[in-house]
Amino acid sequence: MGNDVSLMSDVRTYSVGTMATAARSQTLEVVRDAHESIIHVDRLTAFYGNKRVLNEVTLKIPSNQITALIGPSGCGKTTLLRTLNRMSYATPGFRHEGTVQILGQDVRSLKDVETFRRSVGMLFQRPNPFPMSILDNVTLALKLFGISKRRRNEIAEEMLGEVGLLHEIKDRLHQSPSSLSGGQQQRLCLARALAVEPKILLLDEPASALDPKSTRLLESLFVRLAERMTLVLVTHNLAQAKRVAHHTAFMESGELVEWGDTAELFSAPKDERTKVYVEEHIG
Amino acid sequence: MKRERFLSLIFRVTTGVMASSPFLILLFILIVLVRDAIPAIRYQGSSFFTGVTWNMGNMYANNPIVHNGVQAAPGASFGILPFIMGTLGSSLIALLIGVPFALMTAFALVYKVPKPIQRVLSPMVELLAGIPSVVYGLWGVESLSPFIEFKLGPLLTRLGHAVPFLAGPVGTGFGLLTSGLVLAVMIIPIITATTRDLLMQVPTLSLEGAHALGLTSFESVRFVAYPWVKRGIFGAIVLGLGRALGETMAVLMVSGDAANYLPYNLYSPISTMASTIAALLDSALTDFTGMSVHALAFIALTLLVITVITNLIARLLVSMGRQNVHVEM
Ligand SMILES: Nc1ncnc2c1ncn2[C@@H]1O[C@H](COP(=O)(O)OP(=O)(O)O)[C@@H](O)[C@H]1O
Ligand SMILES: [Mg+2]
Image (tube, rainbow over all chains, first blue to last red; front, top):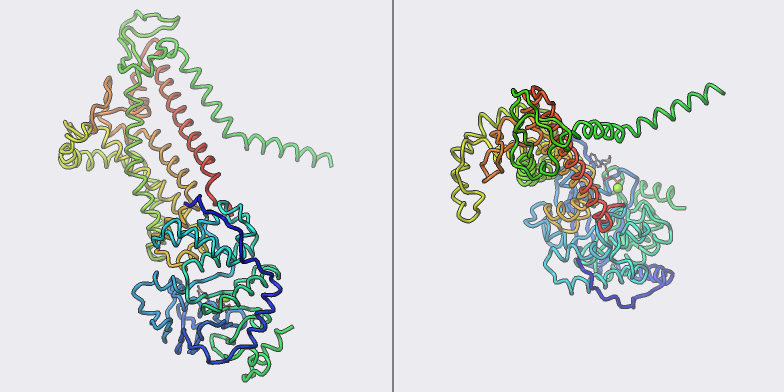
């Protein structure tokens, strides 16, 4: 694939520190319900075989904001997230009741899952770059969607710049991603997801395998992306939810216990279970 | 203390011998074959590879001819070009037909078939690989050769205007095409099983990334799974080729046992190096000069060298390919 990408200098150099501050101030500015909801989960009950892992979950996720899903391990966060883009449908034994509506479409009756998934990107718990060059990782999907090589390389450059990789690895674009650090790989995966211009990003503990510095960098990117897309962030790290999320939903044993404005949920939880969990887990 | 040191020495020596045993065995076979083949090389010289006539001579005569200091039966001539062509030709057909089939089967098994069915079908592939070659040979004789003689052959000859090699006569149904097809059927399970095992190793996370990105399942397999395994698949194909080159019994049964001419069309009777050795050993042993057996040893040596070279080239290609494939993660 592309060998002729011209590499201009990265104009988007920014500092992690200022972004993190920006994140915090933006959280404070959140006006609840000013954003229309883009994902409607209505009485979602999900099973693996006979085992019920989600129980009547109802949730509305507002657009162009970050919504965090928190809760103890095994409470069904991943299952909920993966049902939003139908990834869970591929798990043997999975079935669900209730509805999930995204971008006005019922997820269960989608005609064209591939097209749908272009508008719903996903980051996984561990970085999963494809076995091809760094550049090809970003351009592969674009190539398959029939976008010209020139345009592909432009987009790749833009997205690698956006995630702050371009200036770090300018001279390594044609090398394997295996030479990148974990944090860089995860940002590469983010650039790959952004290249197809999703409207929603699903993030399943995307920083759980990363060091604190990489984590902060990734968080600052999420905050900035929330200006133009909706993010759903599964995290076991309550401090992270506090730092970046406008809204937070707390789950326990397959149930959505409580959800609302992040600051409110942490400072004045309405449900006793939330209160206990938050008190135990915030350091 | 002393005893332990002694034991550790024994351990070191045994493991050393074990570790180098593949090399030692190969070396041993090579030495034996070369020693066996030398008289034949002196007798026949380089026309071994260019000669078309294989004739063990008049073995009932008692007046051996002497050439280059070695004895042979009168009229003896050992050209093995037809056997080389038969071997390479039938193996090539086997690869052309078997490889696409095996790869598609493996990909379908791993990615398309529901898990319960996969669990049933998967061991069957191993089962097929374990069927003795004489059974495949019998199938070739009973079913495949009539099919080629009366159905497939006549059909293919119609393309004879465009591709002269496909033109008739179709003959008896025993020959190059039948041998190639039997070999294809025999190597398909090997290549399928190896490829399937490789595909099972592809990280799910990588494939999920592709699906989440909106790639179709074909695209995910082609562009994300395949790069992980392509080197290994190459190895699987070479494994299959090795089997095809050396297959003896099944080919012997369906080859049509040609001697003294090169394959003239796709249906032409052939002989392969392996099948020739098996077929002629009996009568070669009656050669009072012993030269015929030396000549068979030379065929065996050639087959060994071709097999080893094929493997080496494959390995070389693989390691050259390694530099621009990003699979080491
Ligand atoms: N593929 C699967 N098959 C069966 N059970 C599963 C599978 N994946 C997850 N589970 C179960 O479903 C429950 C919810 O899991 P998950 O959604 O991964 O929770 P979380 O992401 O909150 O840790 C857990 O009890 C887990 O054991
Ligand atoms: Mg999880």
